[in-house]
Image 1 (cartoon, rainbow, N blue to C red):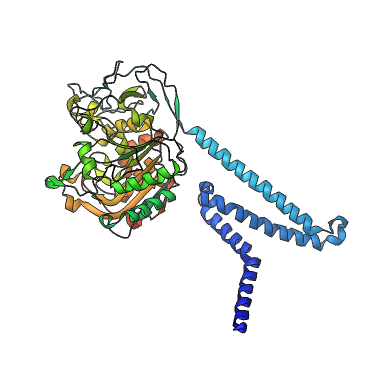
Image 2 (image 1 turned 90 degrees about the vertical axis):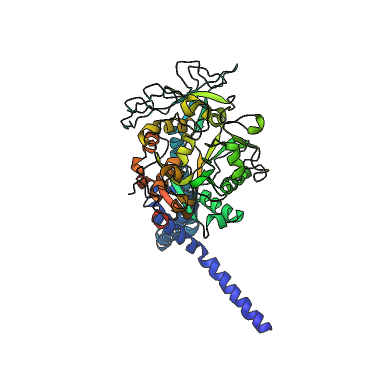
Length: 536
């Protein structure tokens, strides 16, 4: 037994000795190789957290090698240099000073670059020239009641002019042309006795990264832990949520467009491909709450058929979100407070000016510190795709103003829906009022003939696909560009992505978007089927 223990002890000692002798070299070589493989093809990756961790190890290893070489050289010539009898100590000191200087220069350069990016992407909301009544009507020059003129034109609700041409202020013309110089300046002022001042909003996109993760089972078969794992991985790969600060107000915006599908069939609660799975919103909200324990967090949505009903049907209840979100609010107001699509709550409506054009939005959207969009992976019969951008650009337009014929309704029929070019300036302007800081896409199912198949001559059972994906990004424009590629739609036809890119609010060039996790080619699936998305 003693001999066996001696053998084991000797083996352990040899392993420990090997690690002591070679651990630094192994880690250094691995860090150096990893740094060069990732950073040389795309230098911007040097700012990634993993590369910032690898760089000190790699640089220390290089300097260590240089130090050893220098020490050997000095010692070999020590007979000529009387004062270098302690060459090893001198070389070691030289090595330490070099490491400190090199690391300092790198950190300084990184911080300078980040500061430059931050300063170039600030978004400010100032005071407007006109006040807004609490009933949502404007006292100024612009008409915000959503009524259309007899020639089909809309006033300041974002509908197009008769000729359909896009002006620099975001107006659209019927010929479908959009200028790329759409102005994204936003001003707002509401009726109050106090000056709201200027609120600078940080829209720094960080790295243009979109993550794609895939589950190993169908979405409806996933349990809550499966969803949490997918969402956590997607968010982590996309850069995480650490930009959120404790005390921030956070608005979560799902897409609950309708309650039914083909043949008036009620949509299932989970992973239905038409409405956002509540579990994805909850998993994200839990992560937000961990880093923001005191800030107010609400879910705000305006469905087309009554949001209170949709909330209950699709699992958006305080029972499911207990202890995580503070309230779940229909854009038109709660039924329990006596509000409905036809008689909405207009007390939170404010007017906001974007590029000289007036819009009416809910002040809880305008004022949120952080807006997180939760779209689905599906196409749209007019807008090509309906992703993170349109979920805000149309979904945050109150039906009290943009309803049918200027009358309150949950549908936004006063918004020009003739073509993607006519609706794009409106989407651009509403989204730019408070651009999302993060987006998480429900791609558990994919949907062709969207946004709801029966509206476009499709059939739900044929058009819903099993994709098992979750996407995440800090850049909503980049996310929607990737969504279009996943669906085999032509992203260059999505005019509002081009407008937002021109306004500095996101990246729509696939060559400038880094997709991490799953590759697009491995998980894409054609969701084509109508004129707006004929396929690539």
